[in-house]
Image (cartoon, rainbow, N blue to C red; front, top):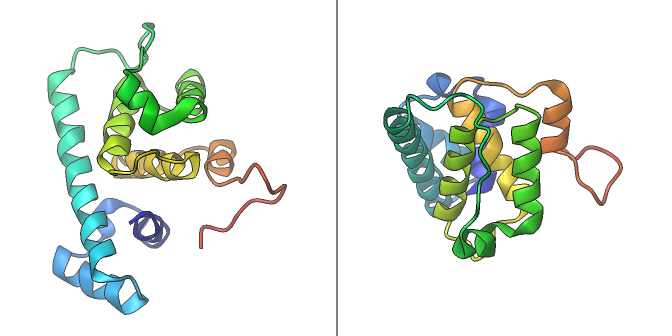
Length: 158
């Protein structure tokens, strides 16, 4: 699923540039993604749009940058892990994401149905949340989203 999401990010500048669902499924199949991966990715993106709308409607009064402290539930910590929570705090303190985007990222990570979501997958989720909202991270943050700690060189998206 995450490979499909990265491909969509690389291929379509904005979500609106994506063709309709049927055409997109055909294009993704032609590129070599299997049907199950495509279905999961498109379902995940549909749910992302719904979650974004729900959070925007539910918390319109919330300021862009909250001064509160986020306490993670044990179930969230099990899925996210300490490294990911630290990364989300870094992004929020750097004003790359706001508190509502953080909550959307957490919700989408939990929806990935992985027992533990790796930091690399969280980086893709962050990128997709920003992309879906028409926001693009600056160059340094983009490099951080696609740098590999084990390698000194930036990793290619695919």
